[in-house]
Image (cartoon, rainbow, N blue to C red; front, top):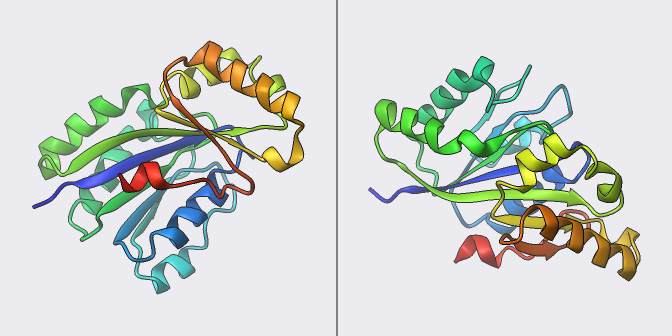
Length: 195
């Protein structure tokens, strides 16, 4: 059985994670997808729309899925979705997520469901408008940006070229190795997912 490709989405509240995820779901309508959403009371993707499209969705609220308080719920959701026919699983984490322990979580999933996931990496959405102020929240930035494989600077239509360069420079200070993309309204180039 071919492994399911697993992507984790992070980013501050309002960075555009849900918009990006909706763009992915539209762009990959020819693929079998599944979603885990983890938000603090924020309006997520409409579950009824996803169910109509036949996309399995698990919602885990009241905390971060990477925190010990909800880790078991996250492992169980991953194990349950392992039984689905999804080719891709996208996990939209809360704005305060710390994805640095994802490999430990996947080891726990292996015990329950077998080696079913091919972890593709962490995608961090960045609000191009507010990031220069948000970067001062070093704990959250370090948690999310330092551990991401792809940083997507969103809302570039709302910032100057100078601010865009500043945001790239700030991203590079925290994570010198990640792929950096940019977009408007979460509609990023998704070729890195298809590879």
